Image 1 (cartoon, rainbow, N blue to C red):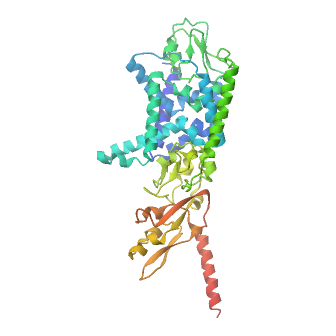
Image 2 (cartoon, rainbow, N blue to C red):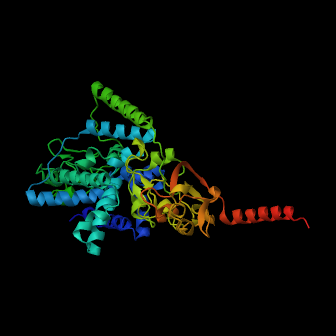
Image 3 (cartoon, rainbow, N blue to C red):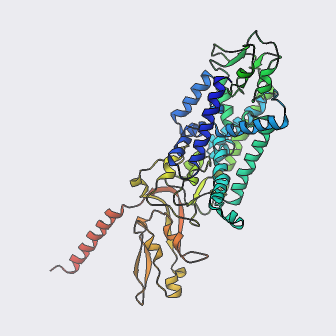
Amino acid sequence: MNKIKIIRIIVSGMVFLTLAAGFSGVCLCAAQAAKGEFFPAFIAGSVIFFFWIILALLWGRVFCSFGCPLGFIQDITGFLGRKIRKTQSVKQPPRRFFRYSAGLILLAFLAVGVGWTVGFFEPFSITGRFFNSVLRPLFQWIGNKTAWWSFSEIFLSPTAVWMTAAAVMLIIAAAAFFKERFFCNTLCPAGFLLGLFSRMARFRLRINEKCVKCRACEKVCKAGCIDTDTGIIDSERCVVCGNCLTACKFSALERNNSFRPNEKVSEELDTKRRLFLAGAAAAGIAGAVGVKLAPGIKKIPCMPPGAGNIVDFNAKCTGCQLCVANCQGKVLIPALFEYGLSGIGQPRMSTDNGFCDYECTRCSNICPAGALKPLTLKEKKRVRVGLVTYYRNRCVVVKNNVACGACAEHCPTGALHMVKYKNDLTIPEVTAELCIGCGGCEYICPVRPERAVIISGTAEQTLAADPEKYRIKEEKKNSSVNNADFPF
């Protein structure tokens, strides 16, 4: 077995297992590995993005076989397909026209600020949604030996979200079963971008004069990019898997020694195709603008801490759900249309199952795309993700004349505190300056179906008052009032 192939199998397997551990919700250090994925690094403007580009300029699409978790899944499925069907890989048409059109449309959406559209096709986000919405709940159910009738209760993601995640993965796996890396060379935005740079790869593979046209390399090429009849290896589609090097017995494959594009592959697009590509890009921009200008939402959901403002958050978040999987307070879930059309699948806060842990900064510090700004614990404790509203007429103290105070007990900043009511009872009072919108009060409120305290999101996250400084300020204020009342 060729060394490249051995290294590829080991490295890709380790990457896959590391990311799987990162989505387990118990291995935060493994979750940090997501920042090394190609498209999240591209959106975040990370130096890691340039690392993958440099590798593409040197050897080709190294990321696709070594660093892509979805590529690893497709390799396993493709391998099973070959064994079960007892057939070899076959060369595939370049589909360059289709790939360019899809890539331009997706990038147009990203440029206008609709990040989830790219995330729907981006390999890390596809894998992440499958890990978080399907595999993680399934493993938890198996581990806890839950009764079969409560199986659906562990799927915290909306039904449409986890079913879509499962369906997309099933379709890609089925395509790989029959056509191996079909998805990578048609709809994958990472494959599109890396392919453009790989055309000029310094050490890309090529076929030399020793080739006897035995087609051994063609039969094992998972990208279907080798054509021994013409002596072409399409470097745009080659994923540097090393299969062909292992299969060739005549040393007919060698490394190129030039940064010049592969002239045999660089077929010129005719005028009609150029016009169509331009039209595809224009249609992508028009569609993206249409999504952005669609009717807005009446009630803005609470975004995760570090999101900043809703426009930047929607533009960058690809909906990979890494923050959802690692949320310590279990307050984050994928959105459907709560953000409107521009935020499908992006995380939002829901107090149905938990609230934002006051001592946790997980989500903001593991976001691979930079949609969430990294926060220190001190910063996070003052970031206002929402504001509380107290509905006095719903409160059990007012309605039933019974003592409660659960909301104030769960408020970490003192924004909700109890004041005298009647008959030795107390009711909540809100100090808006201190509220950070963590949702602890809403989560614990016993009133159903409409709770007495509700957290509403804000379009832009600001800083709440520092609890300690606010307390000192109020003490001084009260002291001065008392002194004014009793000057002697």
